Figure 1: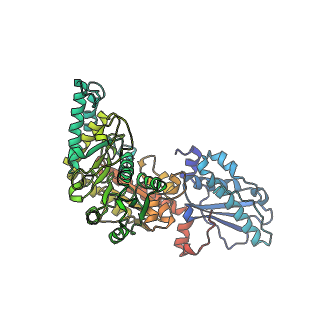
Figure 2: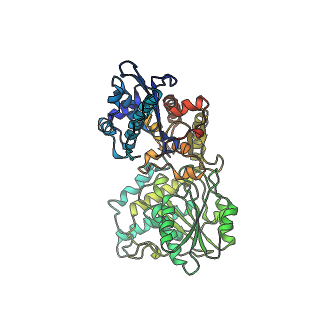
Figure 3: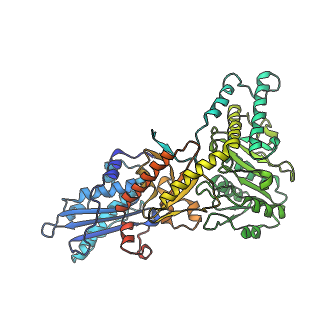
Amino acid sequence: MAYSEKVIDHYQHPKNVGTLDKSKNNVGTGLVGAPECGDVMRLQIEVDDTTGVIKDAKFKTFGCGSAIASSSLATEWLKGKTVDEAVKIDNMTIVEELNLPPVKIHCSVLAEDAVKAAINDYRKKNGLEELQFEEKGVH
Amino acid sequence: MLQFPIYLDHNATTPCDPRVVEAMIPYFTNSFGNAASRNHSFGWQAEEAVDYAREQVAKLIGADPKEIIFTSGATEGDNLAIKGVFEMYASKGNHIITCNIEHKAVLDTCRHLEKEGAEITYLNVKPNGLIDLAELEAAIKPTTILIAIMYANNEIGTVMPMREISAIARKHGVLLFSDGVQAVGKIPVDVNKDGIDLMAFTAHKMYGPKGVGALYVRRKNPRVKVTAQIDGGGHERGMRSGTLNVPGIVGFGKACEICLTEMEADTARIIKLRDKLEQSLLKVEESYLNGDKEHRLPHVSNISFKYVEGEGLMMGFNKNIALSSGSACTSASLEPSYVLKALGLGDDLAHSSLRFGLGRYTTEEQIDYTIEQVTNTVNKLRDMSPLWEMFKEGIDLDTIEWAHH
C-alpha cells in the first residue's frame, strides 16, 4: 500500500515527539490503544490556566506510519486551541488531511480518542466533570 | 555501486535466473507447439522439451520423472494432493493430520474438507516452530489417511524433521504429504530418503517463472493415487488436465538443474551473509530471533524488535529495502501473523517482526546497508514509542490495563 506524501512527511519529520511532566496539574495525558492491536498512542496537552489555551502538545506512538502521522498531526492542531475547541477535533478531518485509506481509518479514530482522553485527564485533575463521548467503534 | 531497491523478500518470490529466461524464450515463438499434439513436429518438439524438464525436476528431489505432475503452482499442488487423497482414499478413512503453521493453501484446503466430512487434527508447534513427534504419533487413528506437514516454514524458515515424521507415517501405514515450496532448491530434498509420498513445490521460489509448479506423487512403495481436481483432456496421467505450460515447464526444469548444481556454493555464501545480518541485528537491545536457530533454511531470518511496530518500521526504509513483516498492519485483517502467534509469541512481538529473505543475488554491500538502516530506524522509532519509554522506566507493560478495541 502506498502512503500519501503527507503521511510520509509526518513519519520522516514527526512534529512534537516527546513527553510532558504528567505530575503537573495543567498537563493532561491520554494513553489509548493496546500493544496487542499494534497501536498505542500517548498524547499530552499542557494548558494555560488563565486562558484555557493549549500551549504545548506532545505525543509518542507505537504503530504504523499512519498512526504516527495521525498523532503528529493532532498535536499540531491542538496547539493554540482552547480545550473547548480541541474537543471538536474529528477523526474524519484527519483522514481527509492525510488521505488515509479505509484500512487506516482506525489510526485517525485512535488519535481522536487520545485527544479526548488527554482532555478528560486534564479536566479530572482540575476538578471538572469528565466528558462523555460516543463510541466511534471503528477499531 | 549499491543499487536500490534491495530485494530481501525471497520467501515471497525470486527473480528468474537469466539462464532460465534464455531457456524459455524459444518455446514462446518458434517451438510453440502443444505437448499433447501427437501428429506433428510442433507437438513432438514440445513434448520432448517437457519430458526433459520432467527429468530435471525429478532429479532435484530424487524422484522418477513419471512421478512428477506439472501444476500451475504450489497452491494447486497442495489442493490436488490433499483433496485428491481425501477423495481417493475415502473408503479407508477421513482423518487428516496437519499443523497450525502450514501455509494457507494447506490450512484452507483442510477447512474446506471439514465441510465435506473430513476430520482434521491441527497439531500445535513447539515454541521453536517444530512439531512434537510424540504428539503426531498419538494423533494417528485407524481412520487417518494423510499426514500433511510442510518441509520448511515460509515465515520463520524452520525445517521440520521430515525423516522422523515419515518413519511414524510408515509405521502406521499413513501417507505423508509435504508442502515443499520453501525447501526444494534451497536445501537437499530427497523424496526417497525423506520418505515423502506426495510433495508440492513451485518454480518461482527457486529462480524459475511464476505460474508453474509440480506435485510429486509416489509410484512405488506405496503406489499413491489422487483424484483429479481439474477434469478435461486427461493430461499428466489423468491427474491434472489442461494444456501444459511448455515455456514455464522448460524454465522450471532449468531452474531445478541450476539449483541442483549450485545449491552447495549458493548456500555457503548466503548463510554467511544471513549470519552476519542476524548477528548484527540481534545486538540491538530487546531484539529476538523467531523460530529454531539450528533447524532452518540457510537464507531466512525472522527477528522481532520489541516496542516498535513492524509496518511502521518497514516504512523507514521500504523505499530502498523490500522485505516482509508479520505485523497486522500489512494486511487488511489487522491480525498479526498466525505463524508467530502459534510459536507462543505475544501479539506485541508478533506485531514487531521482520522477515529477511536472502537470495542468489544478495551481496554483502546490501546486507551492510540493511543492518545500518534497520538499526537506525528501530532506534528512531523507539525514541517515539511510548512503550519503549515505559520499558525504560521499568514499568511492566502487562500490568497496564489497555483499552482493547
